[in-house]
Image (cartoon, rainbow, N blue to C red; front, side, top):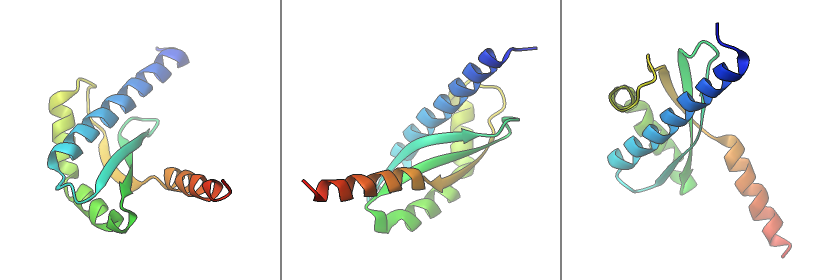
Length: 114
């Protein structure tokens, strides 16, 4: 059985591999009407499910970008499977990274004081 440190490192490698390949896939498939950035990947403990968090600029294109990404989940999973050796690729979902959105808003507000 693996110890916690090895397991944690493996999870981080899996998350980073999914993040990098998702970013490549999105870059190659998007129509560039918006900037879609993969900010983080959340992985379930059993490694069967993952959520790819993204930020979208301009923000009024978020819904369209999310619809596009959700339609492409099957192709994205196949792309990751073909390009990364992580064993079984988890089921993928996509969501907006509201933490990143909140951070950007805080930066915007703090810059008003300057």
